[in-house]
Amino acid sequence: MTKPIEVWMTAPGPNSWKASTNTPTIKDPNTNLTLWESGAMVLYLVEHYDKEKKLTYESLQERAILTYGSCFGQCVWFNALHSEKVASAIKRYYSELGRILAVLDSALTGKE
Image (cartoon, rainbow, N blue to C red; front, side, top):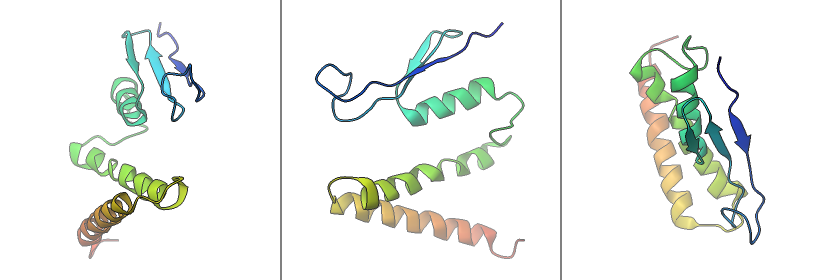
């Protein structure tokens, strides 16, 4: 029987794990693995528990496309949500987002 995965976060403060932000963390008692980076958590959970591929795709090429979302997220974070405007980060993620969208546009040209 599979044990439930523990998920927790700690609030910012002098006694937290990472004072600048909340840190999402999971511990899988079935494999004794603890992860604390959200991208790593999602990849692990999908690879380890989504045996029927309900949350992801079968092929490596299709799964690779899922990683584009992190660039979108970083672009939004640095442009709209971050407390400081970090011009170099905004420029980098906008540039990367433009490149990714150009690749997707090229791949979708002529397809329904």
